[in-house]
Length: 227
Image (cartoon, rainbow, N blue to C red; front, side):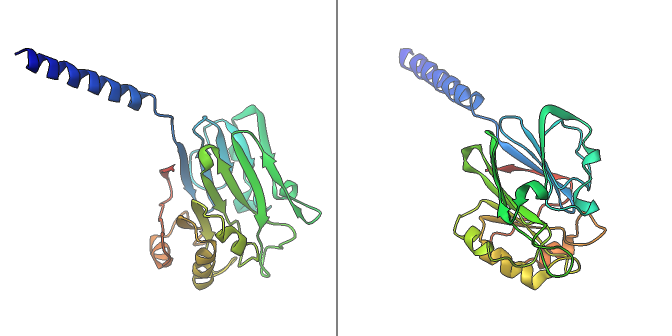
């Protein structure tokens, strides 16, 4: 009888300790794919980052950072973000690319690096940028912006990035075959097709054509945990 009571007490203590560990687990970073080229990240610290605001919903959270890859209307609808914290920063392509030099911004809760983006059709490489965002804990997200193949993608491929968003619309940017080749060059742990069909938030059929290793399809309006 005493042995049984001791076992029960030990089990209760063990469960209590496990519960405390679970309760103390830090919050995770979350990413909402709003559609087209628009993303929202909520960091584990509660900081809110919007990237290329334009599409979908989810602009109600007060912004701490707004990133813009270029000046086209479908990437730069900053008026949608009406709630902004006092120290909110807007970092545009013009701030990210200064006199031909790509800039890096250390914000404490994230490091943001401007990287090459552009193509010969609609987006000058002298005016556009992509972003590499490094969150606390080392989670990295590459957002290609409107682009075709760039020289810098090979360098990104050596960094073992966690997530990469690659454009593939084939009209204003590279088409599917080139996008697949770029995705393999960047070689992220998770590669997500986006900006895949002009005028649409998301295109499932096109997303399924994006045949790359470690593909991750995120429908518009869906939120994922970044880890």
